[in-house]
Length: 195
Image 1 (cartoon, rainbow, N blue to C red):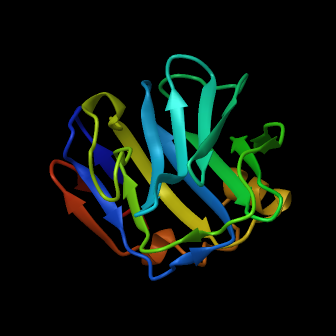
Image 2 (cartoon, rainbow, N blue to C red; image 1 turned 90 degrees about the vertical axis):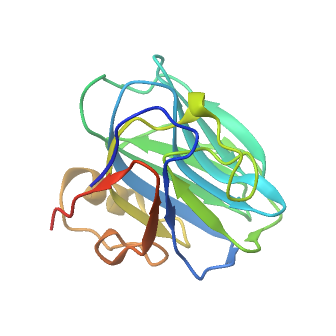
């Protein structure tokens, strides 16, 4: 589990992947907190918000970004001071994105189609990248706990998302796999393995 104990414009976790071309993405993770925050930020040199999950507090609104375009998802059953699982999917061919909070799907929304995420990928937890690998805003920093981060290079099925949300038996991510995660901690962030 990663713990981000304070507001900062420096502390973050950089995740390592060799993937440079993504025609589809699914990201799932678990988190605990109660403010505006970036949950997952993937940037390339051509787009700082190539894939971003951002929670607006105190409302039930999530902003989902793909290829520099975004949509908002409203009416999610978000409760303060509890663990939540969140998954987001996107496909470059259809341009459709969807959010799943605690196993419950949002409506599907069109965001961006026609081009893959391509280029040197930087993935950051704890901050929202306003440039490739940096330009962090203290007001968008994650303060709380995060675990079980997985990423796939395809849209996983609704059944797999339910499995991730409700039980420990699911197919681990083929881009990022929590049990084999390679990462670098920058600043005041703590990591405790819960195997």
